[in-house]
Image 1 (spheres, rainbow, N blue to C red):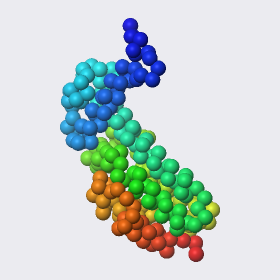
Image 2: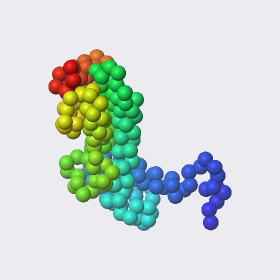
Image 3: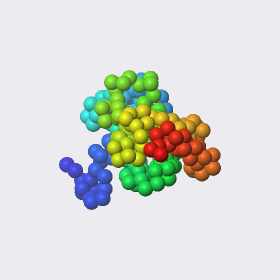
Image 4: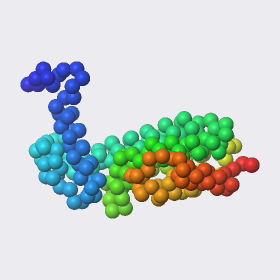
Length: 211
């Protein structure tokens, strides 16, 4: 029988709290050691729950890994989607809008723990079949879709928005990432990083601009 404490408004039910503890423990171990090395026993010990509880909640290690990855991925995609909607939905000044978008992503996504976790959780060593369908589409796909829209509206010149998105990312965000050490030490888009973004946008527009 559940106690009144379990049912009080604003309190997280104990089963939900255990689920969160398990996800947090699994995330820490998967990020640190990859998929293969952490055992269900190790995850249970870190979460201070029984092995049976993990199987009751997640039906095994693979399902748990998928939930961890989905949770991290959702945060990252939300950052990229918000930046696209607010900076590139109707670009009056395309150069300024592209710079603003790249700055938003580098400021909000690259330094975030979630971005670093996503990178580490999706290393090439992770079997692709373990990646849920919801995360096999990289956030760059969102940029591809927006570039297709911009091309249709005459803002950029390309018949291959996927290639354009990859070029844009390589010239801006990825260069900042390389300079920032996987995003962990990156804190601002000013200075050197700001110049990388501006120069990258200019190079992109020389290739894909309409005038």
